[in-house]
Length: 87
Image: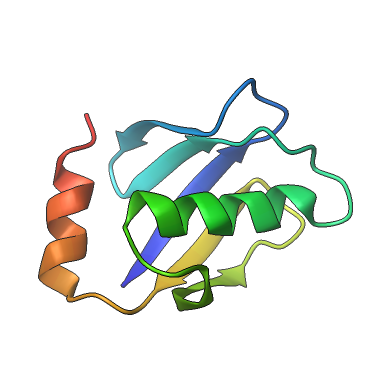
């Protein structure tokens, strides 16, 4: 599954804030320096969707706030069900 993510770095904690259309807004505690926020984001997305970190890939947006993430390791339907729980 491919998802679009808008990242908010330097937050107090990692959390999914909201979903606006097909874009997921996520806060991460790591700063946007030397890829730390990207690594924290991929780890958090793995935990959120209950997949291993090795099943989360950053496909686009390495230097921007809007990123394209690919998640493997679960069925598309189970990932959609998790996405539907986000207000």
